[in-house]
Amino acid sequence: MRKYEDYQETRRFLAQYQLDQYFGERFVKEFSICAYGENEYILVAEEANSDILILVEGTALVTVLSEDGDELIICLRRPFDVFGDIEFVLGDRYILNNVTAKTPCKLLSLPKEWAARELHHHAGFYRLISLTLANKLRETSIKYNRNLLYPLRIRLARFLEESAADEGLLQTLQYNELAKLLGVTDRQLRRVLAEFEELGIIARDRRGIRIKDLRRLQDIG
Image 1 (tube, rainbow, N blue to C red):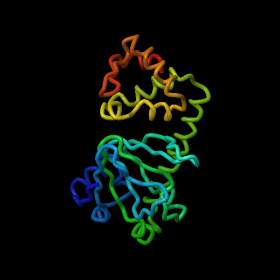
Image 2: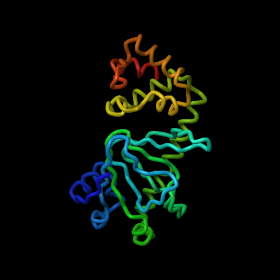
Image 3: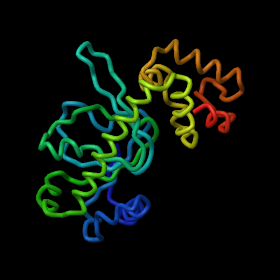
Image 4: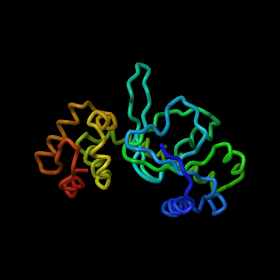
């Protein structure tokens, strides 16, 4: 991980995701930028964390360890998203889940202690926290509804469609990770991937999955 300060880059990220409506110009100097390489841990469960992190570039994988030591995949996160918001609201110093950079990632970092002290009465900051928590609740509900209501073929098509612009993710996400993300076995996933490949919708090689016919994916999903 490389941590640095660049006020111009911070302003660009804040403007790109309209985060400047929550953080005025006077807050720019409080942010640092953290850059992570592919498959590098951003956060580790049960370790202390002192920052609120805003994902502004790349794709991150959120996982949790089960009691028997298996790593369970919760979700993928893309910009913009916030890590450490739940812990901040609960006043918990320790991280709930592992977060890994599946592609190179950049995050804006804001010290929790400073935020608790200086933003305690800042309505914009708490609107942002409320928004990110509400989005996470909604996405969790949608995910579980999809798993209950839709067959794997449709869920996989929708995932590939949503990830079509992120070739780096489709090249680094392993089959067992994708299977866990969709809540199925590796064998079930490979069967549907083989079907899509036979139909000419995707191609598979050592680098991962490549989408050949986005229109047909959209029709399936």
